[in-house]
Structures are given as structure tokens and as C-alpha cells.
Length: 124
Image 1: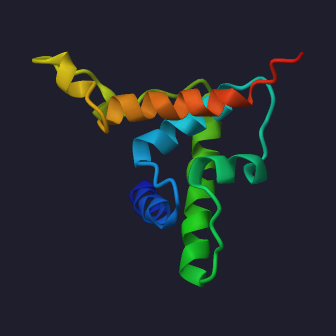
Image 2 (image 1 turned 60 degrees about the horizontal axis):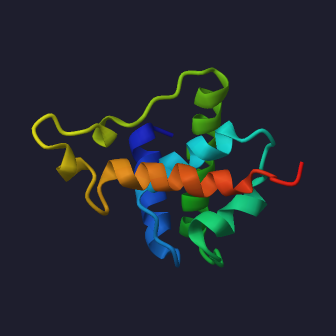
């Protein structure tokens, strides 16, 4: 499946969810999961990321497959140390404050990464 198709279907899945994270939040979240010292299984992070979703149709299951493909691609990039922030997450050269406004790609990406880091076990 092409990256564009995966992205499109992940966005559609997000719109079906209670939390409705944007695509950049999801990308940041996956980066955060990849940087954790322990692997977090999908059944642990899916509800945290999207809220509870009851998949009913084949189309919704295809969206879930795309989410998992996106997750696997992200984990592969982290493991091969080939990860980088999406280009839309860069600071504006003319006014960096525009890039840091609410619901812009960069803050959403960072919020996603921070949310995933909550899985760090602080008791060990």
C-alpha cells in the first residue's frame, strides 16, 4: 500500500474515533512509542491514541490495517535510526509563532510524542 493511501486511511480512521487525533499527532505518538525502553503492544496503545472504536465494517478494518502499516513503518524507521520529523512540522522562517499555534503540525506532533512517553514505567 502506498504511503499516500495509508495516510488517507489513517486520517479517515481518526475521524471515526472519539479523540480524533490529527495525522501529525499520530506520527509523533508513534515516534514516542518507538523511543520507549519497552515495547508497548497495539492493544495497549490503540485506545490511548484513538479511544474505544468498535470496528464494524470491512472498510473500518481496512483503516485499522492502514494504521498498523503506519505504525510498522514508523517503528522500522526508529529501529534503523532513519526517523525525522515531517516537513510540515518545521518552524516558519518568517514567523516561528505561526508554526507553534494550536492545531498546527509541529505542536501536534510534539504532543503525540509526549503522550506516548507516558508509558514509561517510572517504578523501575
